[in-house]
Image (cartoon, rainbow, N blue to C red; front, side, top):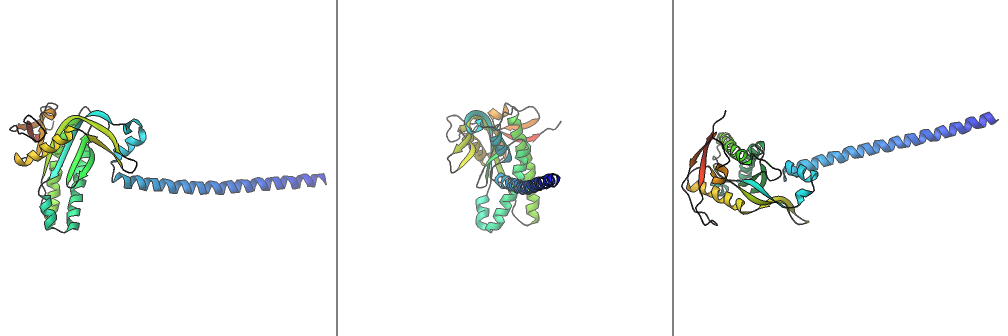
Length: 260
């Protein structure tokens, strides 16, 4: 009798243990599915968010708390703007214009990212890109000019694609300048972004505007020229007064890069 009693107790205990194990396994399976679903949602969110904020910025924000605090940094600013695009918008179907513009942005962004540029703003048909804003880059000026030259080549290739579709070809102007800016996350609880504030932004935009007056596509300032080596073929342009400056701005057009 005692033996049967112990056997019965043992069977009951084992059954309870198996039931607990089975329930825990089911719970673990549910948790694994939930985690997998959550990871999938996070990946989709990062992909979609990356369309509006560069991936490098997202990673930098997640890795560091200090980046939220605006700091003074020496940054190279590249400003690019399309020529005659407003007229194109007036003469073509909006869907076609948007398609052309999106293709242009894709080509330019690839060239900029390849040379460590961070596309900070897409302003209408303009592009504001920063070099050295997120982390120190001693070669930022050279990287910016290399990016500009690759943007020139990319635009030539993109124009072939546009021409094959009987669309008008594009042309741009690029201004590059370097100086101290205030860089960091700015905004409020509803809307924030990583950006920069300072006179170098305005100078780069003014220099880009000079490309029309001086009949060229890439212009750099003296601050950029002093950081380039002999591989960059430059041509000095006549000094020009620009808005907000008391002295004429000296610029150089970038003709090519001699590859070693």
